[in-house]
Length: 232
Image (cartoon, rainbow, N blue to C red; front, top):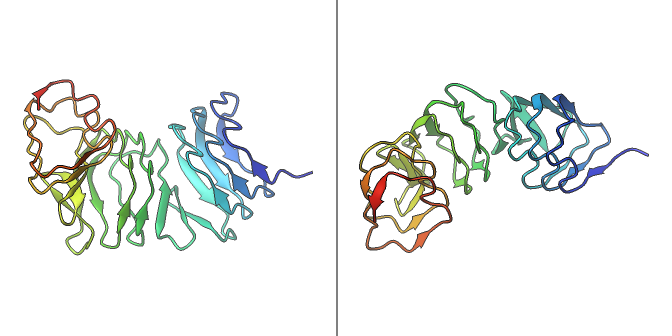
């Protein structure tokens, strides 16, 4: 009989899957972590018209993946420039880990999912959040070490940037600091929440970091790899 569902972590760390990956036209559901850590997938993942459910971490750390291609008859998902998106293009699920160079998020996007750009180390330059984005998940830009600055469209009502750091519009949530940031940094006094891994891998930040008086929350691994700071 035809395979309808691929179970949780079914092919996790499967080194035998190489090159392109084409899912059968019968597959309707990919459960959590189905193809996680499959770093030998080096080409395109082709999504069939039948796929309607996508679990968390399905292609987590499959960092050599270059593109997603979704069948045009799929009713739940779509692809533009190799990205995996919702059918109506308002949710960005995954940017392939092998994507390189400057990058433009489609203007239709409203939601950028957790881990969407996880380990996209080849993306470089400024990352601008489009006007319509109103939700950004945790670890979205984890280890995007060649992004030099974050910015937001001036008309965006949910997000802004300060000194290259991505923040909520009210500047009470600090989402991510560019990994390439060097020297002393100042966390805005308005900051109440520092996202998980917000300063992760910022190994060139130096000096003391002063935490604002109104700070209420520091996420996991917020300062992971900040090996050259003097203290807090």
